[in-house]
Length: 78
Image (cartoon, rainbow, N blue to C red; front, side, top):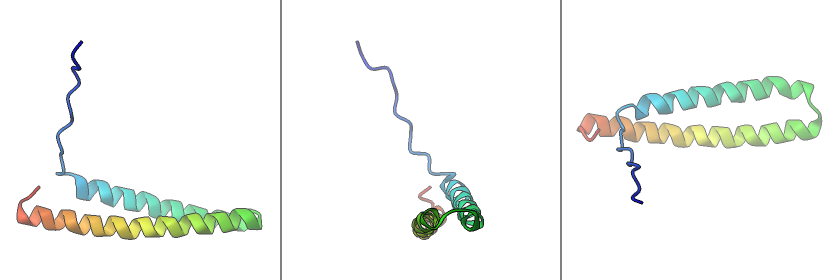
């Protein structure tokens, strides 16, 4: 029996907006975690700080990706 599934095409037209939404959502999660730190035990607070550090690193990478996508749009690659 043949596989009738089709691959999705690579649609990059909304990548900038999608990345912007992801960054906004991640920033909100950082803020929520910071607000909750005063109500948790020291171990949980440490874990939240570590997670927020990783989130901030992700935001940096996403911002770089967004710059690349904006540049690609300007060049007409998208």
